[in-house]
Length: 275
Image (cartoon, rainbow, N blue to C red):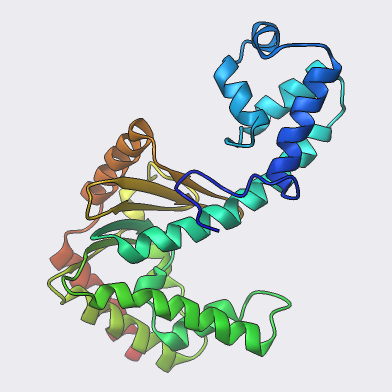
């Protein structure tokens, strides 16, 4: 199924669809129209409609408010948690499709980004996930490395990767794997189409705490922002949201080391590792 930015599977068999159906059922059971519900809860009518139509995922406080309104305990909050997981999976799939066709990719990550990982380093990271057998692991590694094909397209996309210092201070157990990964970062930074910057600890708190930020531009001029945490992912295509995160990214870029100083910093870490 083709999923556009900001859209997901809204079928009744999805958690998101179940949440929307439950919201509609509770409203109709209470004998309320959308207009009446909007008046009672102070939420916009069109927003409530989009929740019931499974076109949007709310924030948790909205579900808590509606649980209190309908006197349903924590039913809606529990359904919301499941819907959020659906949203994470579907948003990630849509992000992967958009990344593969983007002509400009800007990212800030607290880890070494998948686009710049070596195969052996990716395998180490992905093997840390519990209950993953060897076949699943190799499929995941192949999928991650396969994403890097976009770096070799003609014309090549413009890529800027801002990497948190923490990612460069946390080596893997195998010394050669880590040395190869640092060397690969330096090789990437030497490519005309790729810019690598390091955000030092001393820069302070970033405007996107606790996760990564990707900004993607398509050849037709459209753009999206993708925010990813440890258990959630949001794909945003509304211009106000994109502008907010473009400005946040600009702040992170200004806080980071220059590209030249970043290369020097990575070289120093590599030398320390080898000594």
